Image (cartoon, rainbow, N blue to C red; front, top):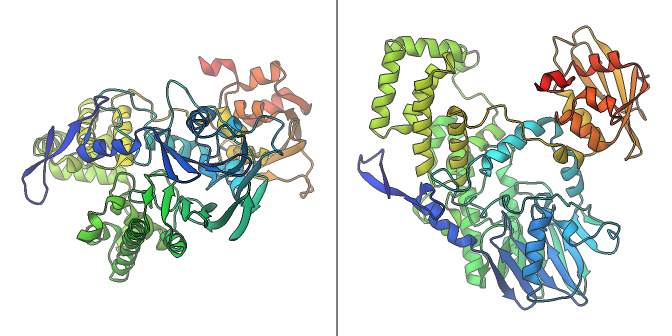
Length: 576
């Protein structure tokens, strides 16, 4: 067991322990892992759920002629594992699939073979396919790396830095089985609440907005069962560290939709099932009140003139909500909810006009270090803070030294030590994984510029999304005198995409709408374009091997065009 000092009382409290993988983490977070023991749970007659496989749960509903699957997980391998469990109950064919939202739609190929997409009903909100195929192409690099960080994909499987669980589920990728993407586009979509009979089962589909704008509550009125992505069983992730913007009011309104159903059983995409009307009512009330309280008190504080830093100290859950099992901070945290809500409602500026045009962080670091009496004094102060268990202050203070000298060996070691201690005590799986990933960067175990976006991540996007992905890589200095249009014929999608570089900026071209004559025309496939954009193949090899062919223009002009963008490997010499 580990101990840390309570910053208010000064007393040491036991908060950490060693888990079954050798991980050193908050004891409550390690204990939370018991909720993700792999098991098949009977909810009521004809409704079953698999828990403990991957990040999200998957549900089976027995229909008249077959089985209905709700969500298909993060890959084909997961879906096959789910199906193996469901086959203990029924050997009937899969007759329908319902997506609660776009996140857990990647295992569908386990149920829908190639060429049979029309034989199985696939239901979802109308926004699911667009979100899956076009979601944030411009920020794909950052969002993917932050998702890797959030889900502990840079951390070891065993040892002190392994993660106990991911707050919402046990793991994101099974390292032994891998993850093969198998998304299938919905063929039945809804935009508003509706009733349907799916394989003989009465189903109501109710749109919700939580961490996505394309959610559905699947309400089985004859069984009193609500399948949802509204109640997670842990504190919600508003103010997500990976960068998603979320409006708490939408989520709160979605809870009200769930409450209006008065369910007898609640089964979530995340968390454990809730059985019985009274327990369901209690859970809904506590989840609603927890979110409403934090939102209202954040707004109250804003109206009182408090800054985000002030608000973090100001907004504290009352005792009845702080101790609620369904509001424990194993995933989201109150502090991040507050910061995220402030940013969503107010923006970046608080109330101190000195922050409108502050000195640069480099100048601030120089002044702070000088005020302490020089780098050695700062290092000594950081060592003392660490010895006094003031890990957050130690990490914050040593950052000034690293701002001026990023390779300062002892400063990197001190910050890594402080962050690792913070990681070991936080109850939030997200926060722990972010802390430890930066520790690994400081220790040189991973590069801060590690590439995580692969061609498979891009090849599922709509072709025009490729141009948005490329557009934000343009170097304005290299391109300040360039005006040129590239057209790409995408041979496997019967379409064409284009990009215009115009004196320091790039704009996506729609040749069906814009009367623009291309200077360069290329021909390729989605997969080969994705490979070039993710640096899996050099432009030299793509042209030599025929992965990309030039229809209009010459090699020099094509090379010069792509050389205007970051991270495009032009020749094989750049790989060496």
